[in-house]
Amino acid sequence: MKIVICGAGIVGSAIARHLATEQNDVTVVDSDPEKIQWITEHADVGAVEGVASHPNILARAGLADSDLLIAVTESDEINMVACQVAHTIFKTPTKIARIRSRSYLDPDVKSLYSPENMPIDHIISPEFEVSEAVGRQLRLPGAFDVKDMASGKIRVIGVLCQDNCPILETPLRHLTNLFPGLTMTIIAIIRGSEVIVPRDGTDVMQAGDRVYFACDAQHTERAMASFGHDEEEAHSVVIAGGGNIGLQLAQDIEARFDNTSAHIIERNKTQAHFLAEQLSQTKVTCGNSLEADILKEAGVETTETFVAVSNDDEVNILSALLAKRMGARHTVALVNMPGFIPLISTLGVDAVINPPQITVSSILEHIRRGRIYDVHSVIEGMGEVLEAEALSTSPLVGVPLRKARIPKGVAIGAILRNEVVLPARGDTIVEAGDKVVLFAKTGSAGRAETILSDKDDIF
Image (cartoon, rainbow, N blue to C red; front, side, top):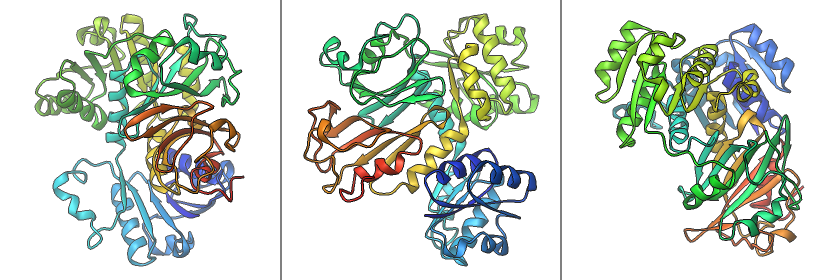
């Protein structure tokens, strides 16, 4: 696939590197020469320096014969105009734009993005996506990553194996006997920088491992208990940072969490007043989230979850650590810079929200081939969880999974058939039309797509 990406910032660079590893022809456009130099040194991509919405710049990037435009610059307006130019001048088949301004995302102006006006095929909203991710953390604080798939019937969960995890050093093939009736399958074990994709059931989990599993959503509580996690849904939340993400999160809590109270800490006095006007059930404190007195005023000492979502990674990490030390039961920090992520869990922060990773997942959902319904990029971009429909031509269909030609780096997690969740076991047989949730290690997503649709080209 030939792809032009407008914007070489954190998100643009992440998606460019991801797509380049899958043998796509990627060209990145940015007006900053330093960003252009960085991306060409770190990824096998082409690059063009210039304003991403200018027709002559897009022409130099090869948009005339490209399949896809992804506009993720820091400017909503440039992203929108780039899509308009791509449609009108270059007839680009698919256009994706990141739009952050709440005004542009107002449902009352959705007609703006019709084919007759400003033809954008898919809009990515980081604030909305991040708020959704934090909301999932609030409902399941024992996990560091949560994703609902298959219309909410299947849940993919990432948990940290601590010293008290009761199934440490237990071969995975024994879990079925230990927990009869539990629809749960381990799909990935992350040990340091290594990703272990279970194949024969002989792998074991160790303390410090980050483990992803797929389970029947109705079995979530029992599945979490098997790892020694019994944390309940958060009923009190302190939010550090009252920008777009903090406001969106507080509004979501007011609208969707019946028994949860929220308190926002915002440093800017004008913004704090604005928040107080916009929110009817959320308390607002004006102050610095790095000051213990301010955290104490917001009730951090007794809060169940502390969420740091300011625009500063360092502030988010430090305030989460301070809140944890003061008594917050569970802490979540928003971190944009990928280099910080491997360090955070070792410092004591319970979960990390990475907006670039979330945005990459949203984009991949729209560009994966075949009948791919959902994509979730796992922590540090080490792999993807895919939800897809198994076609009649799939080599998975009609044979027990133990006999299916599943490529290395790919693990089947669960199957949804007629609204019933089936565990992925050796004797499980996939049928055409089933929804299949699987994990693909980085670099294996193309193979995963193929085994769901095409018998003739597996490897």
